[in-house]
Image (cartoon, rainbow, N blue to C red; front, side, top):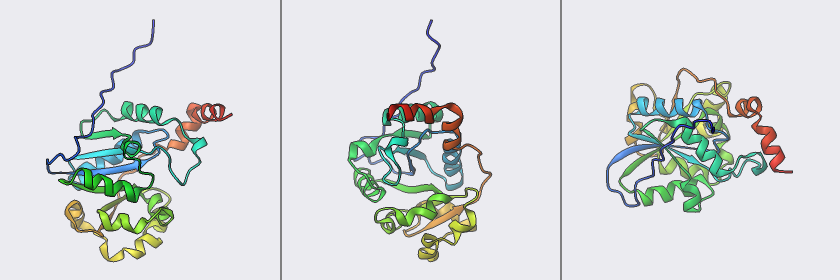
Length: 218
């Protein structure tokens, strides 16, 4: 008898040109694999920023990472959907369908495809540190508001990073953070919250996924 596997319902993105007005957080990444920490940040964003939804953009290939360290895209999407189980979070491989490789292009394509949606980019403090390595990174801040979630041990370095200094005037703090979703870019906020301990690296090591990936690449 096969072991029982719970049904994972796929929530497709709305059709292009959908005119329903709402605010959506975009959480991009490899999700290699997705874990409860991703879910926790997404739900925190919905609550703290007053978002209607969060979309997980499962990247076909992070330009800054070695593709040999990744599970297949279909597998990463499937695992992400198994983790989510919440009506406010959608998992999508839309970057693959849009044919975009860089975040700057993805953001532009999504805004063109869904003109009625207000998008907010979501990322961890570690990404605020490394975002100057991203292709045309300043255009991301110019295109949509950005919410940065605290992540140990990157807090201090992130808040004094090149990106933080470059867009210092656009930082929103205190009671203004709730208004980030409707702020005119460049606007960003650093959100302190009770951190979740989950780590994709730890999960791969403890679950043996690293060994599986290594065998596939041989």
